[in-house]
Image (tube, rainbow, N blue to C red):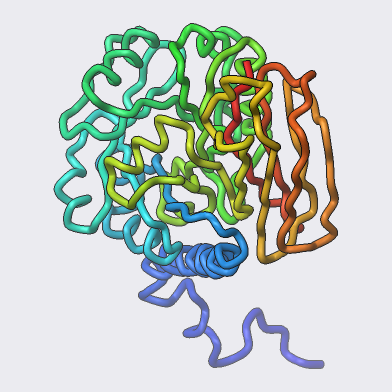
Length: 352
């Protein structure tokens, strides 16, 4: 009868529990896997750009480092942003901007995310700490007066268990136009970002739009570890890649939020974030959606309802043109889902 052993002779030293590099590898191995994901996405977007025909800058306006409650360094965030081939990356730490010097060293942009009444508040474009007064409207307005771009992160909550109350979500209706908010937030996610809290954000977005509000949306990772950088981003139609130009386009809603698909929507000469001034003179509605890895579904949302749906069956590019229906009174936007479930959202064109 063979001797009963727990481990084959000579293999003890091969067990990772006895490997001196285990602690380092426990961090680096999942980070390497995450890097492979965003490198693949970068290649995918590069192929999609060839079919898209519209120039845009791709970036993330919301992430955290060890200067607040993130576990990664600014250098590690920069390395992942480079692997993801992002055109810009903001590090928006809580409580201040002590990350600014490191961000300059590594070519990143500095922002901050102070808490305020009901919601969090993200502030871009200031080089000093913004101290909120715990009044959502006053803080949002004050950030704008200081020349900053302010937006609301995760307006309905964030994965996995943080779900905002109705009171917190209803507070969004008190903000002045234009409201800028996240519709995809990648907090605590890897590979893909869209989850049930983002679906709640989409529903809140439509409620605000139906109330006649102008609401520009963005996609950000909210990464508290470098692993999440690059899984969701905003495609910004800016004049150039400077921070000033990017923020100007974000303030105007000239962008789309995406995990992979590229989206462009126009009505005549009016693009996303714009308003159709004279319906009688409005040109045709045109949309273009591209994903080199294949599209599963494209749909038009107008006035809180799905108006048209197409299933491109894995095609890389979908285009559509039609007259603007007179029955659509408030807004029109486009959603896309790729064959692997990754989402994209255009910003609205306002009709009212």
